[in-house]
Length: 142
Image 1 (cartoon, rainbow, N blue to C red):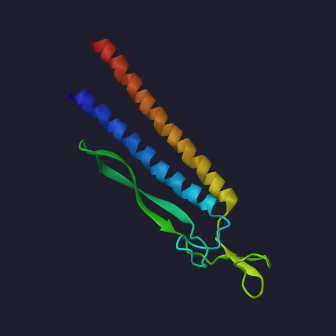
Image 2 (image 1 turned 90 degrees about the horizontal axis):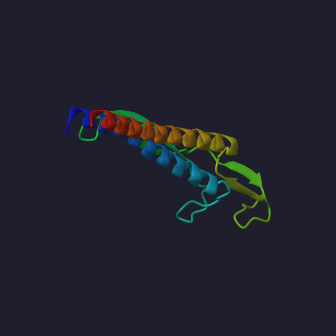
Image 3 (image 1 turned 30 degrees about the vertical axis):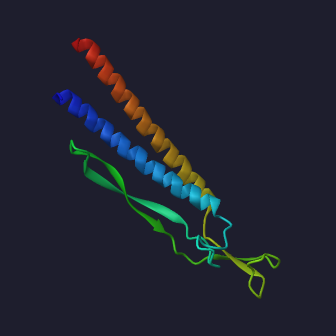
């Protein structure tokens, strides 16, 4: 490979790492939204779902070319106390008629989803620009 090809691959690695990271973030957001009214965890225990959030970290060694990027350091569980809501006829209500719901803020989740979607689009745009630049350079060279 020529030096030019290596540079183009490094640029693609950066954008690809952003795409992967934002996809994982969107998965966590989707999981939070899907479980916003879950009174039981994934094991079926009477414990509300623990919301997930993603921690990113910069990476200067992605790929064989040593290009920079980002990766998901950890998908964490938010273990804040649940929201208690009075729903006396719910099957999971306690003796006083309260259920425990996950502490998920719908507005925050939607805002995070929009931000992740825009970041994903920006990375796709960067890949398209890189491809276009490579094609134009090849036309000039040949």
